[in-house]
Image 1 (cartoon, rainbow, N blue to C red):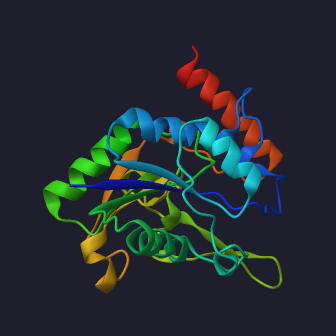
Image 2 (cartoon, helix red, strand yellow):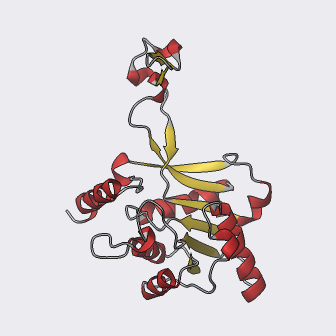
Length: 229
């Protein structure tokens, strides 16, 4: 079974300048994703898909491959993760006659990734013949007690049937942790997410969206607490 790790890292970043290679605790943040993929021993190929020469140079320095640059069509704000994955797999097939059974898309700004989680995801996709597996984390407060704000700024329950329910009695709800996604390439053509999709549950302390500089500082604090203490 041949596996490829694809780390999508285009040059443009609107909210945090040069986000994908910004220093995160004295190392470019993309390095953490590259190193996690390499140390997991799961992949025949660890590559970075980028349109940016500087990102490519840094990626090579930390051990990833950049066999080709991303096309202009998949380098704008409208290109999806799946667009990038399909482009990479097609390029490997056409340029190098390389085929992969499983793909893991690892985001470049996910320094809290645990190698054991990547390994668990791979084990699940193989054992259960899932089309995909990705990490999830429980919402910190039950969404069933959510409020909507009316035009007159008064509040109302979105699900009034749960007004008097205790939080501990409500069903747990999860959201995408935004770190990585395993795919079975043979099943992708007819896949309708989240059909036939498995999950790996993460603890909240290992999850952090990084969209602002405040998020960045929080991620650095979490990393120090989890991996340097």
